[in-house]
Image 1 (cartoon, one colour):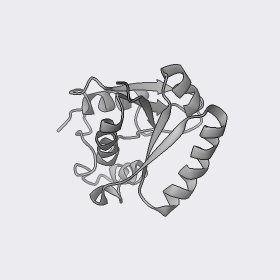
Image 2 (cartoon, rainbow, N blue to C red):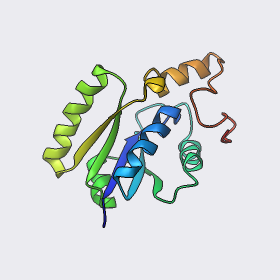
Image 3 (cartoon, rainbow, N blue to C red):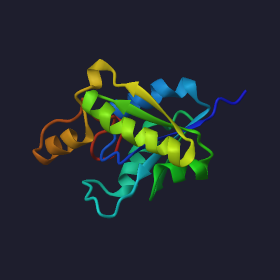
Image 4 (tube, rainbow, N blue to C red):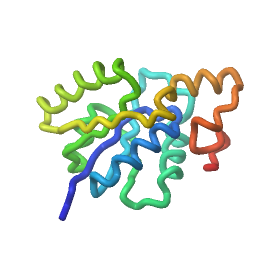
Amino acid sequence: MSRAIAVFPGTFDPITVGHVSIVHRALPLFDRIIIGMGVNNTKKTMFELEQRLTWIRDAFRNDARIEAVAFEGLTVDLCKRMGAGFIVRGLRNSTDHGYERSIALMNRQLAGVETIFLPSASEHAHISSTIVRELIANKADVSAFVPMDLSGHLR
């Protein structure tokens, strides 16, 4: 019995332990999860596309049901290309919910794609890629917040 395919979109600059947790918690709901790393050429990232993809693939290398792809454009277009009927989003707080809810409603209207919201685990609710980048820029230890060392190796 097929449960379906979901896309977990983001920039993942860098991937965090919060992202990893959301994927692992969502996996029992789906046959496959595609981690869609959005590429926005107008957005400045700290880490190169290939490095971010490598980190994502390494973080999930032991589970063939999880795939990582880079994409440009709308997440719903990626969903159509991959045969995904669902988008998975993690919510850290009520601000995330308000923002993500509007996008979810639009995605349903545009393409009939449903969004599944998972609240962050309490131990990850304060972690965001933005904060991790700020810590990295200031040479702080981020080892508790990312699944790899920044030279590119998983811990």
